[in-house]
Length: 86
Image (cartoon, rainbow, N blue to C red; front, side):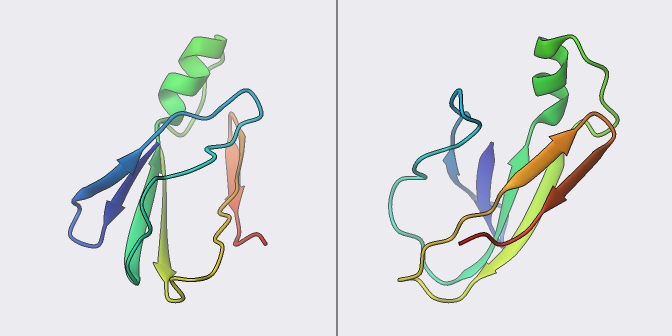
């Protein structure tokens, strides 16, 4: 996973743990628009599964820098879904 700001500058990166989560992205973020990019092609290749989406990009607007943001990605070989969690 790679997190970039609105200009496309990398801000953080990480790999999911055994539970499918990234616990921390590091330093606090400023308000603004960010993009999470998941390399789903690599994920499916490692598992020996053919997937339709080689990457998933989720753009979101971080407005409250003091809030907790949870952005789940639910993934299958031929579909994905996301939402703002709590």
